Amino acid sequence: MDGWMDEPPERPLGKVQCHVPPGSGMTTKIIHFMVNGRLEQAEFSADCSAADVKDLFRAAAEAGPHHILKMYNANGSVVNISPRLEANSEESYYRLEVVASDLRSVAMPPELDNMEYRLHHLESRVTEDVGKTPDIISGLKSHVESFKRKLEFHSPHCQSAEHLSWMGLFKADGDQQLSKFCPKPKTPQLSVQEERQQVRRKFLNMSSLQVTEEVREHLKTPIFDNWQWEEAEMLVLLQVMYTDLDFLTAFHIEPEVLQNFLFEVYCHYNNIPFHNFQHCFCVTQMMYGLIWLTDLRNKLGRVDLLIMLTSALCHDLDHPGYNNVYQINAQTDLALRYNDISPLENHHCAVAFGILSKPECNILKNLTGEQYKHIRGGMIKCILATDMARHYEILNKFKLMQPVFDFTNQDHKEVLMKIMVKVSDISNEARPMAVAEPWLDCLLQEFFNQSDTEKLKGLPVAPFMDRDKVSKPSSQTSFIRFVLLPLFSELTKLFPCLEQHILEPVRRALEYYSDMERASKDEEGPAKA
Ligand code: 5GP
Ligand code: MN
Image (cartoon, rainbow, N blue to C red; front, side, top):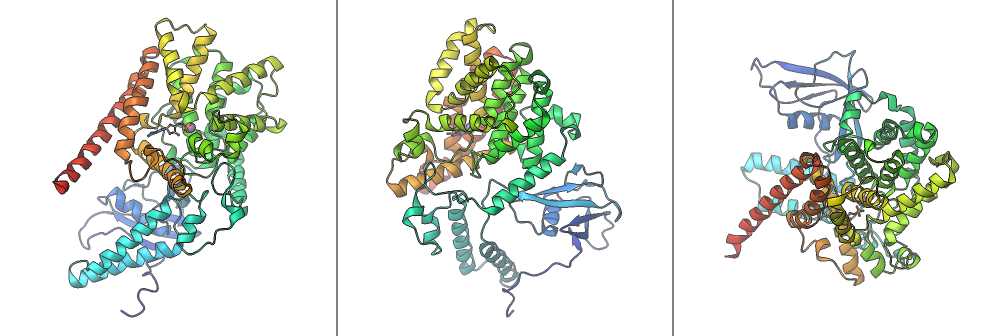
């Protein structure tokens, strides 16, 4: 066995197989595909599980568990990686791409991935020989696990001195320690710029005309799955939203200007666990869906729709991953600049108008001064309304208007627009569970980053952000009961059709997390007794 731990065992190049019992007579499928510049062949039987087939291609692409894989057919369309994948010939091979690392996770150092892999292999070998996992291996595994967990709760954006110093890899440098809005400076890396340029090239090479009618329709619903799309594609989908709401014709927006604007917006979202470009996309997509579902095109002016969609798009620009309470307690530059009054939302809005101040990005440049002023005023109101500290103030106003709501009343319209942006902003739980749950992991990851920093700096820590006090179910049951249901029910009173689209999924999510909460309490129960 000497030396076997040095290298992970290799699989024969060019061919991967999901277990097919020899002589079983079971029909096997042969799939030809190109990955990393190599033509490969996969073989599996029709009754292979979907997970096994995915694992098979994951192994072929040498992808880790957090990579997103995409398979394209010979026509360039994305196909589902499943046992139902159509068999093909060598000439009509599929193309398998590792699109990106799942943004919900943080890349592990290769040594750690490698160590985990070797441990896993050692465990299988020893279990084969001895029949059970020896304690020493279980101990090692839990060490690697806990090490990974510690790393996972630090985003690359804010990888802190503390985190690196306990690994013995970093010596804190006084000057470098604290930056403006985020406790640690973001050192712009060339690779980030390169990555953005790649996204830009891909985005510009695609045309919104390529987006099929089916996708366009799906984009109008809250069941749209953001995790299926890469950044350049999301930019195209945003372009589709502006196009299909007729904004280009109504406001004389040149397509290149819209593309420049969207790309700049993308560049101004940070690579942080939750408040990133994916969140911006989801909020904008939910707003777009709500506009269609409630038939707002026939109830509000086109300019109001432009205000709402653009506010959703810009509402978290340059979010540093640390909330207003942190900004104020840590007396950051943002809190100083905005006198502790919604520092983040003021900043998001200022960044938005900074982007629009560049003529090549100014989608409002062909409007009259009056129109520009109106849109600017509307966006400021909508973006500032996303400060959750103002949640009850805005909801109560809307509640009072509800019985006499009038779409021609300017005050009523303004409150409704704020409510629509707010609903979109916190609408993850209105999405299918498979889409929503990873978002909660992202949110908690960002919360824990903040509370860890607060603990280190001796600042107050909110219990809902504290990794020692909060769990996924506890976080969601109260948020759904006290924030989502009252807000969504109020909007549903005005638009009853939203019941099935946003209220019912949120009620299901409450049941799901309540069950989870009960189960974890039951587990604790006997142990404590
Ligand atoms: P945002 O910061 O995205 O503009 O405002 C929304 C805020 O509402 C988030 O920062 C977060 O504090 C809270 N929030 C949004 N969605 C959820 C959720 O699903 N669960 C919990 N617990 N809080 C949420
Ligand atoms: Mn947001």
